[in-house]
Image (cartoon, rainbow, N blue to C red; front, side, top):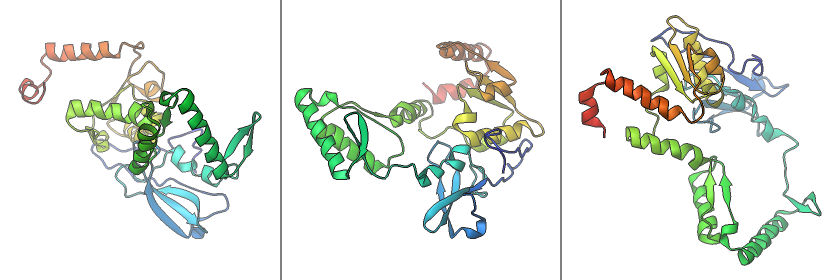
Length: 284
């Protein structure tokens, strides 16, 4: 087992341009548990980031005891990032809350679910009466299902009447989706992760892929350390791991990224480095 603190991306499996990304099965089991002890492996995929890495969850006596990557999956080829590899242990921790807490005289004390909900309802009615619906705000994660988001919307907007509802979904995913729709006509990623296997150059524009999509960075690292590695260009004001590895690091000042993009577009157009017929036919 590789020390994933000292080396978050694990051991390298280099491969050459146009080659097949090798399989590497990452696995972590609870101390004292072996593969023979596992009752069953349950297939799933990570929802902690946008990579969608395929996972198998080890179950023993009805509880999670570990995870492993799925080697036949085309996205991660068995690799698992540190958050997915170790984060499940929080579910088994004895420090997890099992009962709601309410604050009494400045101290958090255990209470029943009914009493906790009574406190929420009482306080909500008080705020509605004294300040109105604008006193309420919701900020949520992106790990809810569609039905849960709908229910939350009914409670917040139709029930309480507040427009102050926001979440990671809009601040992160929806902004990217709107930009992708406007640029490519679809909110899916415009390329395939497999493009990395064939690329001559990889350009990361403000994308700290090493920390936000660790398995994707593993794929890039394996190309960079194989024969005929691609050039790596990183545009980022921060000295991120990709920036430290880059052939060219454009350390732009904050707020100048648009100026850089306009300059690059200017050079492409001025020097005729684009397919004018295609652009005229397919863009506005």
